[in-house]
Amino acid sequence: MEISIFGLGYVGCVSLGCLAKNGHQVIGVDVHQQKVDLINKGLPTIVEKDIDTIIAEEFKNGKIRATNDAKDAVSNSEISIICVGTPSSKRGNLNLDFIYKVAEQIGTALKNKNTFHSVVIRSTVLPGTNEKVGEIIAEYSGKKRNQDFSVVSNPEFLREGTAVKDYYHPSITVLGGDSEIALEKVAALYKELPAPIEIVDIRVAEVIKYVNNSFHAVKVTFANEVGNISKALGIDSHKVMELFCKDTHLNISPTYFKPGFAYGGSCLPKDLSGMVTLGKDNFINIPMLSHIDASNENQKKIAYDLIAAQKFKKIAFLGLAFKEGTDDLRYSPSVDLAEKLLGKGYSLKIYDKNVHISKLIGSNKSYIDEVLPHLSILITDNLGEAIEHADIVVLNHRNLDLENYLDALSKKKAVIDLVRVKTTEQLPNYIGLNW
Ligand SMILES: NC(=O)c1ccc[n+]([C@@H]2O[C@H](COP(=O)([O-])OP(=O)(O)OC[C@H]3O[C@@H](n4cnc5c(N)ncnc54)[C@H](O)[C@@H]3O)[C@@H](O)[C@H]2O)c1
Image (cartoon, rainbow, N blue to C red):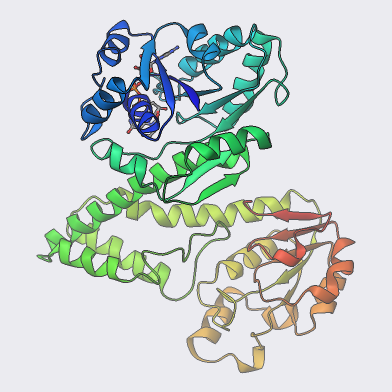
């Protein structure tokens, strides 16, 4: 294919070389004449393992050239890939000026082009940018999105230092778009790569890179805070993290990675608090670990605010234990939420198929006697009765067997789901906590 690449920095230069190596004819565009000249001499614009050889070979093969003329690049290609910088502004928010400038240039160049053009956003951009880029191109070209051109979001995941290797071995290729033709064309660019191509909603494609990099920052910070505490205790932090990574069931795995309600139970809050105490007792500053609890409390507030916003006071509260499949009520976030609602004058009917007042014993019973002393009046073992009572139904567990109650649920003022119960998602009055 004939491809133009806007921006010849780290991402653009690697894409230029690697796409040419995969057989495409590629034109690079940059506002810096020096970068254009380098490519036109068969030299890379960046220092990166293997890219010098690739650029030199593909230049020799006649597969790459560069220009500062956007019109030349657009009219001689069917796909334009945007790889310009998206730096932070002085105030810390993202500056998308370069992206919008390129959209104007592509739009202007498309004015006199009569074939369908696919525009790919490879730079890291905020959700909504794809749409705005489409509007700018339409305005400057006088052409119609998805009729004359299309915009596909295709975030880049490579890392400097291993950029060529990462280009050829991504974990996934993500594409977000609203034109089948353009999506197929862009997918074809990556067909040689040994990675699945995930076609997703445009905004999912736009946000994923921020999510990935935020998590990478969390990983580094987590390991550092564990290291700082471990060192203070004379423990080998690398051994600790080596063991940590060996648990691929609970630690390095998809477990717990589902947006939803707060965590609770008798272990997570207690042991996180123990870890934070270890830091404090040893005068170690651990900002991330010590703010996790505040974030968890905030999740309870978000759930409460969502319920309060409905302005109805009769609630069916389905699921009370800290997670399904247990009757353990200790430090259950659902108990906290129920307590807050009761304190604010809500009328609750609580149903939890594993919680039977007469069977609660030991610390479980003492905990609930202290936190929700009137539970015996509020709880029912009849799911239908709980739903019948309510204006608002709050779902705290997934294993609720609601199939026979969907009609009754649909007549409620709202069904508020804190855990994503798939069977209820299609209800007209359904509200998910954070999805
Ligand atoms: N560097 C990385 O490791 C990496 C990895 C993944 C994603 N990204 C993202 O990719 C994007 C590009 O990053 P980068 O590190 O390659 O940036 P960079 O600063 O190295 O290169 C950007 C290039 O765009 C050029 N440019 C600016 N305006 C232009 C215009 N109107 N027309 C043509 N060229 C123009 C600049 O001159 C520069 O050469 C950013 O959004 C970044 O967040 C970067």
